[in-house]
Length: 153
Image (cartoon, rainbow, N blue to C red; front, side, top):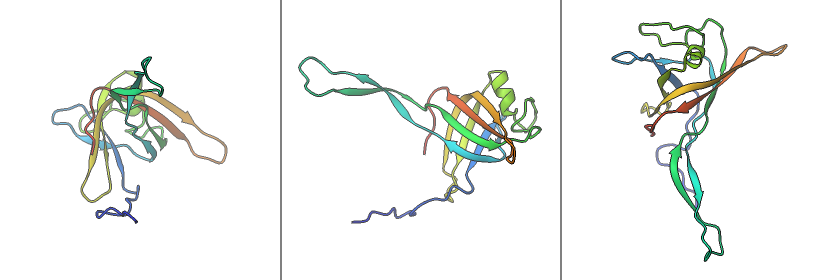
């Protein structure tokens, strides 16, 4: 028997927004430009709790973790959401600046489901790698490390 959600059979990725906060009060979220791929894992640490009377291995989940939150972008050197600059006002700091200065910011994914469903988390930018090749365009891959519990849909 088929089981299709009464909400939708699927949601297209087109229209997804990855946003970063400007660390002001009130906070303004700015959409990161040129995002191509996003990964938002949720997992737990697992402890082996097998004891001598067990014949099968036993495991128990402990601390929850978001793992390696990551995204890829088509990198534009002076794009305000990408560059190594503090920016200011309504515009948040660029991702390279956040990494180099070890600054925690609020991030969110706004899903294109017509309800503005949102996953939100505070994180540090912990990796920013630029690649380029002949016949291609500049790209950057980045990772974030969450700090504390996220708010998930």
